[in-house]
Length: 96
Image 1: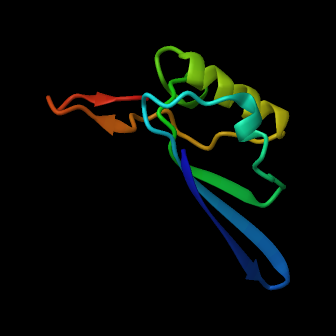
Image 2: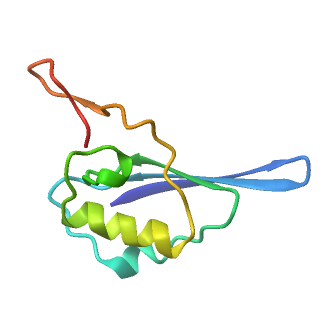
């Protein structure tokens, strides 16, 4: 798992942006996610390779459920329209 965190000070307020990449075969434990400091002005983006109905997938997988728990434990929300996020090599759009 790789991540980059950027903190921006805008008019006296701090916006934190965390970009995370989790390779498809990487096993991620809950305690690794809990190391991220998340506050009300945090945006998390990236390629997390997890499926969840929370962000538009047709089903949830183990990693997706782990991410759902993390999101709920931080009182965060998912901002997604439910549109597909991945285009398969065949040209088919898929929600991951």
